[in-house]
Length: 368
Ligand SMILES: Nc1ncnc2c1ncn2[C@@H]1O[C@H](COP(=O)(O)OP(=O)(O)O)[C@@H](O)[C@H]1O
Ligand SMILES: [Mg+2]
Image 1 (cartoon, protein in one colour):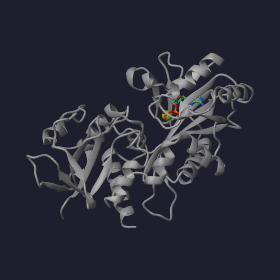
Image 2 (cartoon, protein in one colour):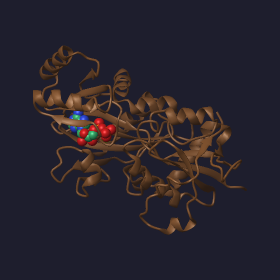
Image 3 (tube, protein in one colour):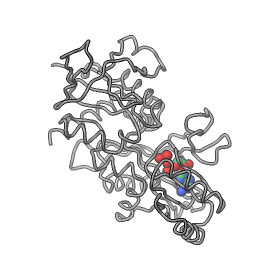
């Protein structure tokens, strides 16, 4: 039987370019080579797609990132997964992939746009579709849909870049009265804690809202919750008559002096957070949260896989736990130490098998 050709696409124009290089490297190394063959497509920081040939020796090189290849030949995606080479040297050359595996994050990657391109090109791809990706990227739309489905969310307000000074001041008064300081100000469609601020005073509120507008025209103002951060990894069930599969829970404890799980805590400080797998929560609460996570996956139209992050209010009691949806990630990090694969590993699905499942789900969806 001939092997299925997987196009690992990585890089991208977002702030999360470097994370992507590492996720893609892990996937490249650990894909099941008895069934799949890997090809790599790099989107450089200017948004140009490039065909990259990775040497086989790379597979044994332990903690490398996939390379930044700004000189690799430019390609464009035609229909049915065919890539056409654009440079003179490779004139007329074409390469075909059977399924695309996006390993990049943020704008133009995780928000449904790339998924739309794959749909129009009629090439199968892993993860959520156009709608689920777009919903997952937008923290406000996610909240609205979750709320309608009866999923608890953190109290919030929305500010837009076109709001008048008076409107922002009215929002501040409303927030002070009904949400209370401290609050979180967040760009609505970012990731990796980019454009996320904890504010404790009126002055900070006003200055951080304008800071957040540098990242997005839409900004969320949220009540700060004194919370334990509990995360789950979810996989769509290949059997469509069954609910999504949910991993054991993990807990992220920001540490090393970080007040919350900020960009620095995530990427610039080895001691930025303590990760507990599994989270120390009771069996009955785990069961309750597992159901909640299944409902979230369905309510937000997610497909394939996602990481779902919850808040468990530290001030609530074990008898009456209070929890909220924080956010969902439709293209979570995929390095071998990333939370998503780590949670599945701890739940009995090793990394390589997990990749196979994602690819099988992609191929299954493409059959309709
Ligand atoms: N309402 C909130 N209450 C308490 N902490 C929060 C709140 N919102 C965000 N945080 C903190 O900020 C981090 C990043 O926010 P999050 O909404 O997850 O954005 P991102 O998509 O960038 O990860 C969270 O992991 C958490 O530590
Ligand atoms: Mg987050």
